[in-house]
Length: 295
Ligand code: MN
Image (cartoon, rainbow, N blue to C red):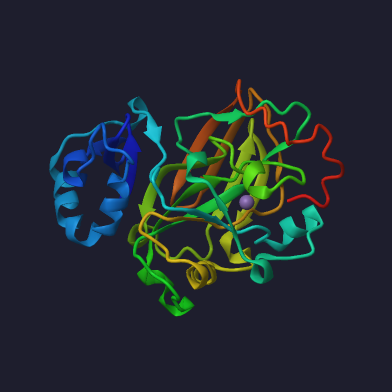
């Protein structure tokens, strides 16, 4: 099943080129704050599944091309991100560590945006802002201290994720935390529909130039390992998102670019890059120096 959020607050099932509105089943409403309808659907998916299947089979949809796609889990309790989780990316950054011996960081959920929304660049003239092509893993069940052998019990599904970052030496959460610096979408593909995620090809283009082309078989820490590492530190909640890390080929984006990301068996999304009016973070220096020691 492919689950989307669209048109303000609605939740839908993607069926071919259509979206079937299941907001009523999911209990999604316009004024809900925080917007936790998708978290609730994920947490209760086993009991809601029959009603969702029935709706998918019996209801008419609206064209997918006519709706505005939002980020699937805007109220995720956290976005856990693995840095340097492909050896070739570690080599291109001159990194002395890998995810298996350093762990992970967090991106703020306020940085989440969806497939129909642009990446809005902050007002940081002269600073390099990069794309990172990543697989998103969506957690389905609360867990803590989960051994890797049980990873499949808690993974709900998968999505596409672009980890946008200002290169430099300021704290990573600031450089990676601007609004729209974590596009996730266009939907969640449930784990049962996607099948084995251990050899998924993912690619990213900027203006039709292929920048990144990788396969999850080359991850330093694999998907079971990422779930185990995160759950060793913190309780994972339904709707939490894990960004799996990026392969080689990261590079700058600028206003006017179109960034396209695609993964096998998930789909693709193309985002506009625009210059925003805000984001004048004065603690960002004008000249960050060599990029080799940055993240
Ligand atoms: Mn990343």
